[in-house]
Image (cartoon, chains in turn cyan, purple):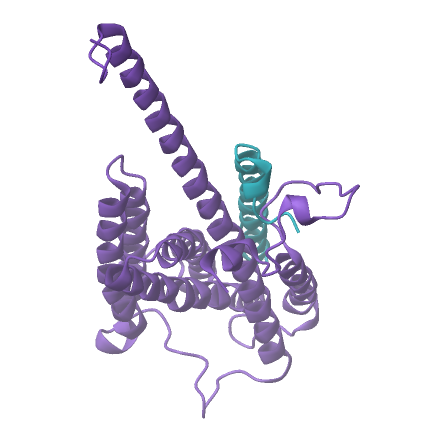
Length: 42
Length: 276
């Protein structure tokens, strides 16, 4: 069962970290554009 | 609907000025209504998959609890190899045909998320291989071709980062996106073309090898991974789109600066028309 738990932990922790990093990069990049050109505000 | 509207997830076309007085800009992000809905589906299906995959579904007669990795490993592999890299293939072909930026960025977004999923496929496969085969890795046709695919798409991502003319870079990446897919076909058929330690397909349309709670847990795993993939690709695409626009702004600003420097130089040297 240890291999199973290790597999599930690695997959979901990796995906969670990747998602968080992507959202953060999106917010940082949005700030570099003029307001009328910022995307995905709504 | 324009590519811009697809990219921003809205077709209203309202500018900032059109919004009601007192409008307060929400937190800047690459999220939208669509990503929020998909995110909720991903969270719910993942919670259900964890409950069924780890607790409710029974252990296998031969593999015991290791079979629980099936509900994770197979959906992750399906999403990486047959969904992500197919999107990259389609995007690459369309980009080469008509030079579409939308499809180029979508191909890149799907490839990056696909590489993450393929890396997780290799890791979960190794963790399943240890209790089943007695070793983490064997130079088996399926495992080797999957590892080759991983390296190929890492190369694809490296090409997309090259410091060169963006149009030429996109074309080179598109060619690699098409060539790389040939290996995906090898991965798919490696278990039938060569003698392989890796098992063949468990899910056959007319002769499925699993049923009941095991099948249900697998289906939940597939829904979970598909929704996570969709959420990630939408965010990654929008990120690439933002980067594309930021780069365009920087280029425009640099050109304006150079132009004003040139004009100032001409005026200073007295070479401007009518200035002599």
